[in-house]
Length: 260
Ligand code: COA
Image (cartoon, rainbow, N blue to C red):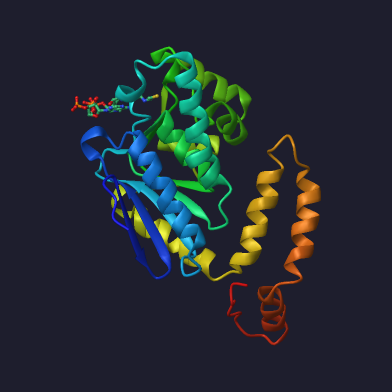
């Protein structure tokens, strides 16, 4: 599939999706959101792909936000639809994917850009990265899940301060806050993420799929995370990966998971 705004590369069963609008600091316009939805949807259905890395092109930005030029004239109802559609197509979609998604934050991650990174399963940042939710400086609030995911990751008080001040934090502070897991030099960012992806790939992706579902359930108000964990735990016992994982352990050999 060919795209105008993103690049999709695959190597060693790891896919790298790069948002490719460097002149606009990879700002998320409607077309880019649609293309990302299609790419993630295809990759999630592709049993050959074990982990996905999401990054931005260039050395300056992961994503500098939603494309302000596209919504500056919107009405109230258009604004509401923009948030609802974006959340469904991209942000909630990524969070609930069964294939793990790592955000490689390679520069500015602002507004919708930070919201996109937060929708990924976890984040690694380059040392030049700067993160924030500047929406209130534009007279609007984060609309792609930022008011919910930022407090989940950094705590309510820190999230309130970041949202109210519209300020940016650097990569070091983002690790202290728990917003990103690791900080590395920009030139090492992708190889570092690929190393983590390689470690993930050795494990049962069926079990990982269940783990993602159970972890996410704890953050949803309409589900009981403990109950989902019990169901998912039970479901793992019916998989070939479980038979392989336990048999390999008992026979003192490395597991070769069939992924089923
Ligand atoms: N939407 C649309 N265009 C954007 C954008 C966004 N969120 N962020 C950057 N751009 C565009 C700029 O308009 C500029 O385009 P131009 O060259 O056609 O004028 C280009 O990207 C480069 O950005 P510029 O502002 O010149 O770079 P800078 O290094 O001076 O500043 C930022 C970098 C990130 C601080 C600045 O671009 C910025 O504040 N962006 C908006 C961040 C934001 O508020 N995001 C939340 C949106 S809800």
